Image: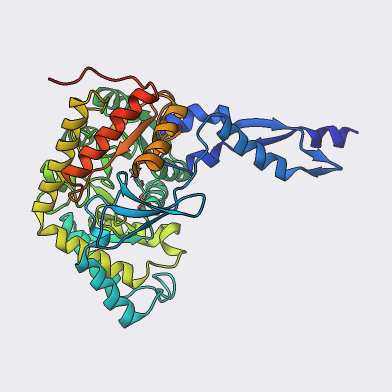
Length: 454
Ligand code: PLP
């Protein structure tokens, strides 16, 4: 009996699922932990009712109106940012994609595509193993040199994604520097949170972009302990930017290293696309820069760039680097083409910012509540998960506009939004069509507006 009743009170602790499932933030990771811990009487004839537990986990997400449905899209090469959407009834509709992180359309740049074709014809499909065994090709070596040059560091190290780069590098720093204390911005990405957690280090979360709070925490930490400040340059959900120079100044004052995620900035800011740190003239002051090849560079993969000693140590200890098959050579070749092309095409970055400014201006004219970001990311606040999904669904089905709803835990509850990422390829006509559709749906779905700008 006692055994049975023990079994009957199985605890299902699934809160970790969400932290790995989206952007997630330090804040979300903490506030949702309790919400996701639930109890089930999962005992059926001495066996655990696994199915019921999985269904219950999904029901919880569904009941909160944030069950994710993926749109079945086929991008059309050469027709960026248009795509074909396969509807649930199997029919097809033309749509304009307004939420891609292929921020500059590099995924369809002929230079990138040609480089990938050539590499696949020359070397075949996969890399053949981990870097250690047989997965280092000429392309991997050249790409690391290209990335080190982009960030004016002496070395760079490739990972299979930006997520893996953050998780691998941060977890490893904790192992290389015993007693390391990590200071983490409250809105850091899920991959940084995972890395920091796996590092096993003491962790202090500072209020988002709040340098006074960061300084108070640095001051309170043991003076002799090694320290690391982990933060992002462009925060992808609000589109706001860190004061990198301010963080660097504090880091120097308190003897800390800096780790900067430039995932939403590489390729996009700075004269050669080195990111916000390049634009702000502080790239040399940041110890470790982390980036992705999957967003503005239009391909896939992640990396860190730093001085050779740091890179070599992470290369030698990071599980997420050592024990996984390396990127296919064709991806590395495409990334080399993309990074080197963007270094010398600053006009694309200027056009990108101009499109973002045009969209923000039109939203403001229409009284649509866009956040006042200074970047290419244009979030429009809905403030309710059900309405947010409704507007997003209607934009897709009735207006041929694809933009995903952004809900908790990616953003805090009550700040649900649509996140637009205009590219240099979004025309005036596309902007006009979008704003008309939004204006109509805002009225139809009764979403709050802001007074129209003069
Ligand atoms: N860092 C930040 C801030 C991100 O937003 C993301 C992904 O969206 C990542 C890291 C992970 O990059 P990747 O998509 O290359 O895995």
